Picture 1 (cartoon, rainbow, N blue to C red):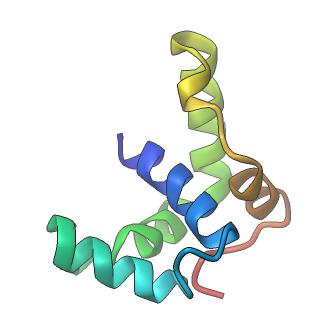
Picture 2 (picture 1 turned 45 degrees about the vertical axis):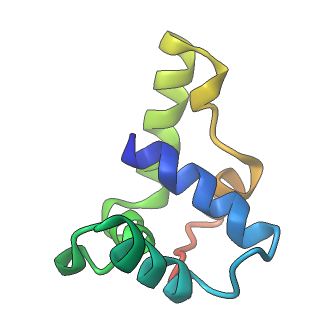
Length: 86
């Protein structure tokens, strides 16, 4: 489910609902209790590797349906080997 949250976070950043990955990380720590030692949701995603997340979401989408399909912003970030914290 954390990967699904990362997937949605990519859309939030792409749609400019939140100004930066750091702002979103702070909101996740303060608002949802995401473990602060992980640095936030998107820092965690960077540590795991965005391409790894997209690969796993693709596997989940194949097995459980389109609700796990990686969003286009997340897929673009993975294709260029990017990180949220850039």
